Amino acid sequence: MSAVRLAEISSEPLDLDAHLTAVDDARAGAVTTFVGRVRDHDPDAATPVVALEYSAHPDAAAALRRIAEAAAGDTGAIVAVSHRIGTLAVGDAAVVIAVAAPHRAEAFDVCRAIIETIKTELPVWKRQVEADGTATWLGLGG
Image (cartoon, rainbow, N blue to C red; front, side, top):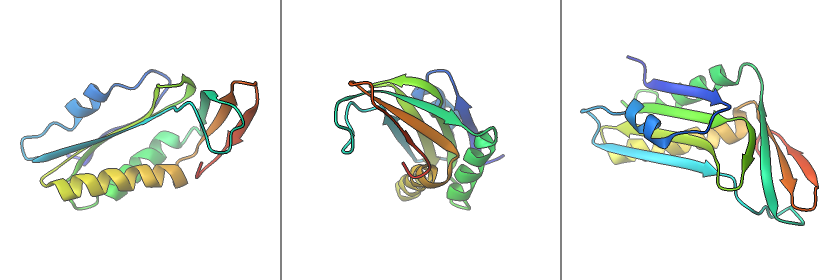
């Protein structure tokens, strides 16, 4: 069985419980999660952030799976990860990751590796919309 049980780019709201269910395994002694949410501010924004608009390359789901597989490696970890696209409001989940592993160190390490690599390698871009109508495109590494 693959270490990656879920790797999706979705226009629908992300469900943490579905990710937890996907990684449920009696061999796992630890489960970590990460939820990246839209926040109401950005250090480079002049006014409050009101929305993020995400778009993805057609190969983004395959890239997300590769990122998750590489992070899991031979740790025994099981991964479920999704990234949302479309217009998200403040508070909406943009990224959800669940990692189950035999031990907590592996679960934390794999989860962190996935989110850090998503930020630098996943072909997903965001347009940040501020309260004053200003909009800024941010690419990989944003």
